Amino acid sequence: MSSKDRDREPQAPLTPAMFHILLALADGEKHGYAILKEVADRTGGKVQLSAGTLYGIIKRLDESGWILEKSQRPDIGFDDERRRYYQLTETGRRVAMAEASRLQEMVDMARAKRLVRKPRLA
Image 1 (cartoon, rainbow, N blue to C red):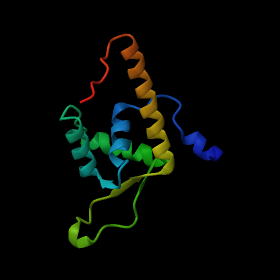
Image 2 (tube, helix red, strand yellow; image 1 turned 60 degrees about the vertical axis):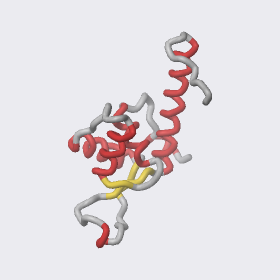
Image 3 (cartoon, one colour; image 1 turned 135 degrees about the vertical axis):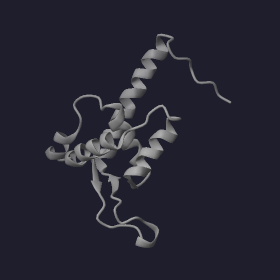
Image 4 (cartoon, rainbow, N blue to C red; image 1 turned 60 degrees about the horizontal axis):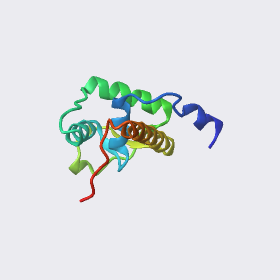
């Protein structure tokens, strides 16, 4: 990892909205509306990002080198030309993985204090 990449790694926890956006992009490129829809669907509607919040965070994530806007677009016959597609970079994937690990450690601590029950196997 270069020093430039290390400088882009987070020093503090991500905001929930940032993590949700990185998580939405973890399985492939998406346009803004698809990100909004996935976050809402995945959280059962508990998290609903506004377009302003989404695009403000996308700008920050892009400037950080964690995501990038795709220059190549899907077949125009299947797409609206106004849509911008985004994908997770390798640095962004490492950031998301580090945040997922941090969150897992916190859940493990809460479980040890009996604030969270152990998952039951089916």
